[in-house]
Structure formats: C-alpha cells, structure tokens
Image (tube, rainbow, N blue to C red; front, side):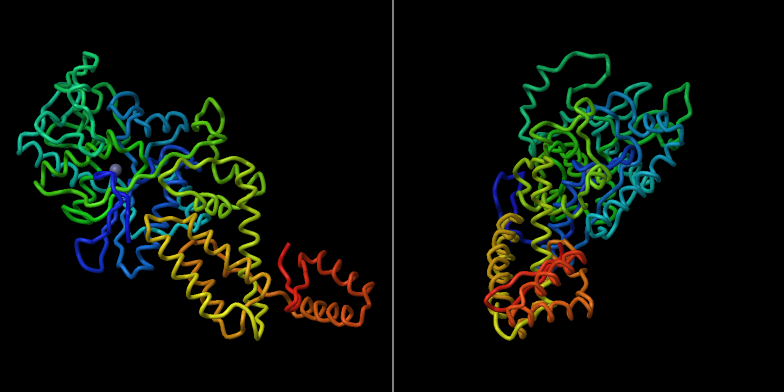
Length: 463
Ligand SMILES: [Zn+2]
C-alpha cells in the first residue's frame, strides 16, 4: 500500500507501527449546521481508505470526532463560537444543536454507506483529558495567559513549528498585523478560552485557570492520545486543515510527548460546485436532501466522488451527477447478471484478475478512478458475453460492495412471472412471432425490465 504523505510531499510505502494494525484519526464534523456535500466529499475518502486497509487485512482502529465545542468562526481564535451562533439562530441550547446535527450526520452516513468508524467521540466527552493535556503543556513551559482571554500556546518555543504546511514563520510573524489580542506571536493559538464575564455559556467548565471552554485544536490532540496513543499511523483531514488546525495539533502533541505525532498525513482536496467554491452567497451549499429532491440517490454522489482521486479538486455539477447516476445504473445491470448465469462466459480467472488489478490501483494511494476503469473493462465484456455459471460472480459483487460501498448486491432477482414472460418472449422470437415478442417486451418494460438479445442469449436489466 502506498499513500501520499503531506509531511514529506511524497508517495510512500505504508508501514504500520504495529504489524497488522492501523491507528487512523480523521478530523470530524463541527456539528453546528446541516452537513453538506463538501463535508461528505471528505468522509467518503476516509471511508474508502478504511475499506482498502481492511481489505488488505489490517485491523483498523478508526477514530473520527464530532466537534461540539470551541470551534470559532475564524481559525485564528477570533469571531463567534460556531455552536453559540447556531444556538442563537435555532433558539436551542448548544447541546440540543449538537445532538440534532449529530443525528443528521449519522443518517447521511448511512445513506452514503459510510461505515461507522470504531469510535466517534464528542469533544465535550473529553474535557478532563483536554484540561490535563493543557496542564502538561503548562508544566513544560509552552503556555501563557492573556487576561480575560485564555491560555495560549507559545509557538516560538518550537524550532519546527509549521513543518507540515512548510510555513514561512518569519514572514508570517513580521507580516502580522499588530493587534490588541495580546498574543506574543501571530501563530500562537488558544488552548483554553475563558467564558465572557457577563454571560453564562451553555457549554463551560471549571478549570485550573478559570471557567471556560477548550480551544478547537486541543480536542483532537487529547482524544488521539486517549484513544489511539502518542504516535499514530495515519491522520486525515481536508487540505484546509494543513496550515492551522493540523499544524497546531502537531505543536501541542509533540511538545507534550516529545515523540513524533503522526506517520502519514493524508489530505483531501476541495470539491468545487460548477467550478466555484461553495459559499452561502452563491447558494451552492448542497446537502444530500438537495440531491434527493432533484432525483439523485446519495450513492450517485458517492460514485461521483470515487470517480476522481482525492488529490485533485473534484467538481460537482448537475451534469456530472447525472452521468454518475447512469454509470451506477449500468454497474447495477452488470451486478444483476448474477441472476442470469450461463454455462459459458466470463470465467473465475477473469474475475480474479480484475479484482487483483483493482486492489493494486486502490492500494496505490486510493486510485479509485483507475479501479473503476478496470472494472469497466470487465463490465463491458460481461454484458456482451454474460457470466459463467461456475464463476462465483456473486462473491465478486459482494467484494465490490465491501470495497466501493455502492450496494450492488442489494438488488433482487426478477419475479417468477417476469421470468416466465422472458421465456415466452424468447420462444416467440425463435418462432419468428415478432408481434408477440414485441408485446411481451413492452409489458416487461412497463414492469421496469429492459430486455436485449446477445449472441449468448437474452439479458435483462432494470430500467
Ligand atoms: Zn482535528
């Protein structure tokens, strides 16, 4: 298995810390608003990663958090708290807002066949671990307090701060606007924020420094340490996390443990909508519901995402998703060949070879478009020659589902009466009674069954 490591800017052979096991952490959703297809474009990739690792025989311990506190509107620890903003907008407590959007996210994950990670911890369930973490950093001299604001991490204490993003620290510091935040360095960030004196927050806790709430970055460091250990195999996130969030996770964890934090950093590129960034002002922040309202299934979107690599920007357009919908339909027709086995046709050997090449593509930095292209070749052949009886075609389709998550094996066979109609049509055709054969064909079409003839016999597929 090879993965592109953002830290080294190289595709590297994957070697786990412990033989046969993978510790994998993905920065999860901030649960303050409807999850949209931009979010899902990211989590579909981590789901694929986890499936490919499992297929390779690894025991995967996958942790993906829910951020339900401390994520401010700006990554620079300024602006409103996203949860507080949502709670005002929806006139609910921040706790209710979080629960509502966690439920929404879990419904969407099911619709997209995203396998549930091993753990999905909420930041608010790990407050004590975050406090202990900050205390550890304080004991080691990495923190300072800004009155009425909070406890901050002093990034100037580290020689290698910004190594993941290859930040130009001197340039950043000198170019920084002198503001009244009280920060010693432009890149310093909040570990613990004090609650505003005049207001009681829904989410706030006692701490050695005063009542408040954790900064955004500390939750991932604390939960990783608690659930996966000091050093982990793979950490994933959107590319927007590289310069601030992941940079700060590294700074906190490595300062506390003195050990390397992560072996492989994997980042998902952006998704654009019709070539534009998603934004409220363009009104192009689509949810799964938006897609469903226009007649598309969530799995059409999943397939669309698998059609490009995670390194490249993917583009969503209504034309693209229509093409993905048609593509999924033809994949389904291919999968439904398992109900129409023949004595002759695609052999076990061809299935094995396809599976091997697909695995090779997927293990090469998750090249799902290549894997789909390989599958396409088999599909074209199978639709023309059908599938041999002894081919164990069904287990091949089950394997496809286990790795691509497209639910191809969930379709049902046609009914006995439909099969009977197909046979009647076939004998009418043989007797050159084309009127009867066409009538039956029309009847089948009304029942959602399309039939076509091949040199090897007739093939049905669902319309
Ligand atoms: Zn994170």
